[in-house]
Amino acid sequence: MKPLLLPLLLLSLQTDKTVYICDSGKAPKYHYDAKCRGLSNCNYKTVKTTLTKAKKEGKTLCKWED
Ligand SMILES: [Zn+2]
Image 1: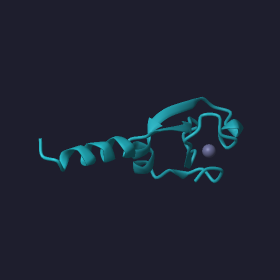
Image 2: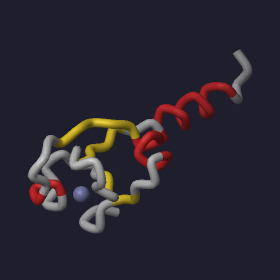
Image 3: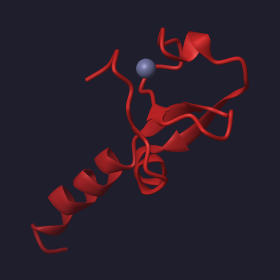
Image 4: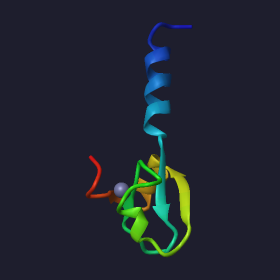
């Protein structure tokens, strides 16, 4: 294995972090914390997704987290 491959692998794992979104169908934010105060306003189900997917759907990080 070339020494360059390991850092690249770690980087790709890092970007595919698990995030949480409110399943209302139009929630514009994603959350790192399932118990975030931004999510406590959600009257729908909280669903787990990945950071990559959430960003692809145009979601941005919740204002309570950065
Ligand atoms: Zn949040």
